[in-house]
Image (cartoon, rainbow, N blue to C red; front, side, top):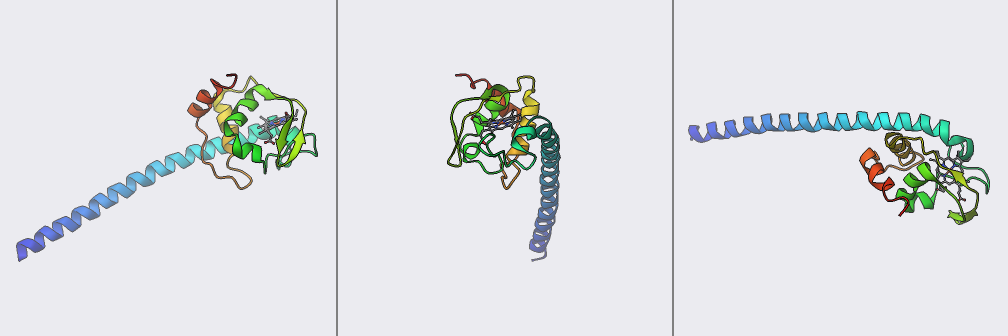
Length: 149
Ligand code: HEC
């Protein structure tokens, strides 16, 4: 009987320990992830203000039928990969956003690095009600390879 009790106590103690270590580990990786996310988001916001807000406005509302909105955009929600491409290469021709027709060329910014595009994208896809999480540089690299296919 006592032996059994001892086994139980050992079992419970080990559970407590494992649990603690497990939660410690999970907590730590979670924290590192969120620090990286915060960095991408903060730098992305600055890059957005510097490179995009002239036309699309700080609040992302765009400007009439000249510059389409980014704060709500069915185009962005449907075409995340195209968003990555147009930041680098620009876009022109007729474009339908939220049912409105736009047709004015947007210049690309080829000098932006893949990291910077990832940061801007992380800002865009986690602002104004979006919560898509971090956009990794690796994803930007693999997307950009196929932009001009
Ligand atoms: C010189 C003005 C200008 C600047 C600067 C600019 N854009 Fe644009 N953007 C446009 C125009 C004009 C269009 C519509 C293009 C068309 O009609 O084909 C557009 C389209 C878009 C679209 C797709 C349509 C939509 O509303 O979802 C996205 C996304 C976008 N821009 C993001 C950006 C980002 C991010 C930056 C900064 C890196 C940026 N733009 C900088 C003018 C600009």
